[in-house]
Length: 255
Image 1 (cartoon, helix red, strand yellow):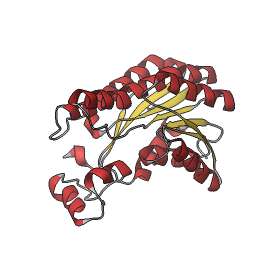
Image 2: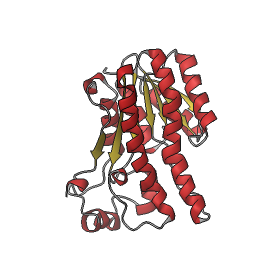
Image 3: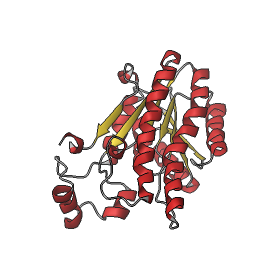
Image 4: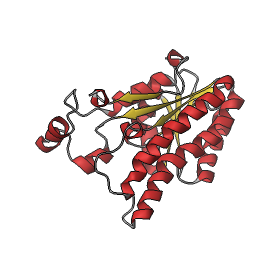
């Protein structure tokens, strides 16, 4: 149990990559606090994790609101006495609206949210004697995105920012025993990607992966394949890894 005795706050943990991260950290012995804007979803995820014999609770959080994020961190530290692990995985589709509104929404949730969490989470980790942060970026955080509208450039801009944020935190707090890394997923089968690309097992979706995107492993990644990387990065097995964007994409960026 590599994370036995650790307290982990997973922001955006009710579904998708956040939920997979919560599952993986809990399976390694961490007490997981599932934090999400969808409070019912966070409670359900925590209950399911607990039903598997692991330790979990939940808290509601709006990742785009600094005070909400601060309160989630305060609640976690107050209830459990410490914060050892922070995972930033909040996300969501932008509201229908004007181009500038879309751009700001993407930057708010994908860049400002992790900043708020790191700002307040680091203070808690210092009181605990150290910790580990994983920010979920994207392959769009180390490359450009193909064919976005101007408004949608908010996504790769934010994800690039997450990598820069992560590296800077890693350098600034290494002497405080706080590590920070970013995971950069490729095309992963999540509820959000299903909304965009449809059923990943459909002929159309498979053709998109194989013929249009040309993913070398010729399949969609699974959320658990991201969650396990997150659990590794926050464990002592990764004790000398910090400031790194870890690409998990089935070989896509190696082409």
